Image 1 (tube, rainbow, N blue to C red):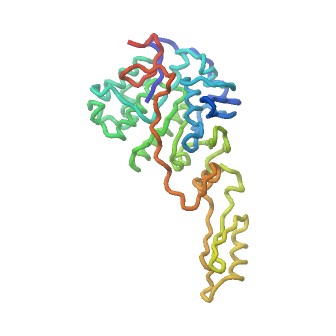
Image 2: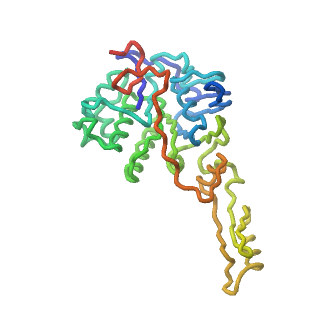
Image 3: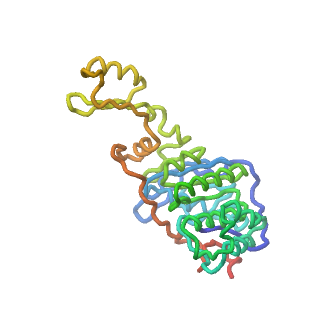
Length: 334
């Protein structure tokens, strides 16, 4: 996890609460001849949970790193909390919380010691004990971080991300490695943060996570946004039409229709056997996974579970000191 913070005692004096939390227009970024981000437009409103979805290599990680101020863009306009991440200073950074997928703590510090240490970097931190309670680590407060389980470490990551009272929290694959119960508990925590006014930008490979948490979601493919809407409206009405499947002379057929009842009645009149059943009849409404796979250009039939999320390395131009995962301004380094 990387948490951005200013030097101790610095003030947070950025633009006020008006306008969107994130406003991106025509964003482009290339690595050599490869264009990773190809004209992305995004607008994230304050107080919403916004999910960014897409296959590996789609450009979502590069986009988020530009928003976090870790990478420079080649072209386009970007405003995060009213400022350009490329030129914003430490006061702006104190308003962000960043939780990366892969992290390493100061292994010999206890949970309480580490959260309190991070709190000293912010002008108006949350109470560390309240944060520890909020992420469900009260019983582990005196445990050294190296002794935590994977799920407990992710909770600690979030504690370090929210202790600075960020206006905007970036969550990258936050529930990787969680069991189902831990995921549900974490989702409740994320929703409570939103209720407190925190804007959350979530990247996840778990579509059910996006469906449960996000107010809106963007699907990114080949460096472009191919769909942006509430999770249950992605792809538009056409993508949500029911699909009727049946066997006709042993050949599998399917049709997407707005009138599945009428189609089934027609099939029954033509194909029903002595038992009155249409061979192989199925009627299904596309799931979010079906719509997502269609949007990214992959067939839904026979699709397996979401691929394991890759480890996200520290950005090459992030200012990351040895040891802690904190990205700090030069003045805050020991």
